[in-house]
Length: 543
Image 1: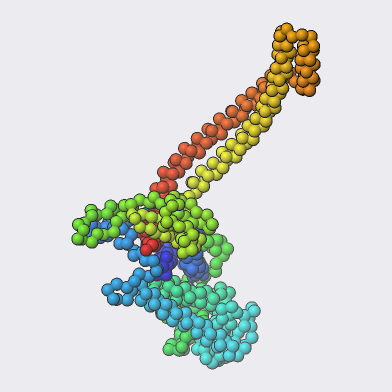
Image 2 (image 1 turned 90 degrees about the horizontal axis):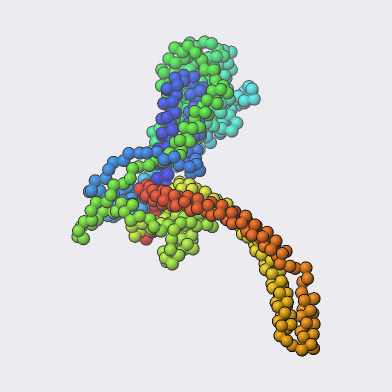
């Protein structure tokens, strides 16, 4: 995925999250600025986390209609997104590549905004250090400076309240309202939140919704702090006059990165809100925070995991005459028969090891340890996008389940083989015993033959002595009856082994049937994933 694709996808997902969160607040009729601010901060955190979540969590395919390509348009993936081996396509017709210009423009603007943020933070920190200490309240340091025209809270890690000169002459109620307003910012860590929001806006400056979210966070923070000040003074008219005075003082003054009391959108809208309001913010309770998390977490998950699933691309147009350039073919025109999925040190797929283009070592040296290679319509492609690789990994889960089933069958077969080995050993013992009995019977037959041969007494005595000697050297405790009993025991155990083997064979048939189902589904799923990757420009064609 190129940098432009990454930023565009991030902005799109983040924009959907901002719009969905804003719509949800409107539908729920949430009026409390503290709760609305907490929801906006949650949206900000979710938007910043979207790229990491998109890469880490499984994809959820969402059907998305697309316009049908006409026969005058290329129907292949090249028509939707050019595929280049260098990441950025070479310029055509002598003009600079628009992607490079767009990336350069993005970097310049983002760099400018980040630099402005950094300078503002540095100026605010320097101003806070140069100000004069005026005490502390609830652990927050209070200072004053003649360089500020209105109260302001400065500092991200350790916020400091800086008052304008002449604060010593203020009435007690006026000072109490100002301090309560600024302490409210400190309690919520508004300087850090707004700095983070400004950084987010700088990274996605081309998205109007990033500016909208930052403006909402700034305005809601002031609304919540205004309510905190009114809760302390209960004098809406005096507080409105105070704010109007600070706004008039701050007009045309330079700004730094901080939370100024007079910083707001339209002054009249703020004044009218204070004068016409009837309720005050009660802050964010634990129940409110839990509700924000309960509603926001599924929304962030859905936005981060959503994966567009366009309908099947229509067939490619008929081939044109040789003199007419042909449009690229549809992704499914050739079908994928050769592919390899590399995961760490392992590789799976379907390929011909004699194919010189399927050199695993060369592919690993070029693309690393995690990628997918496939051939379609005579062309070779490589995918390194983490989202597509996750889809491939999920698609292989049924095959892994079949492998686990096969492992269990193999284990059962191993047990049967062990039992069969034991039966074979006993059968060997029986065979050895039978051989001994057979030898004894052979000696008896030889003695009987000598007696019937009519030999003289001396020859007969010699034959008998030799036969008796052989009988004495043989095992005398082996007889045919014991062998028969042993053989019956062997036959009984062999029957048990055969029954176990039949069970194993039945399990193997189930595995084979499941493998056939998985093969059909897996083949189609792999094809769909590769086709989708080509349509989205995530498949890099090898040259």
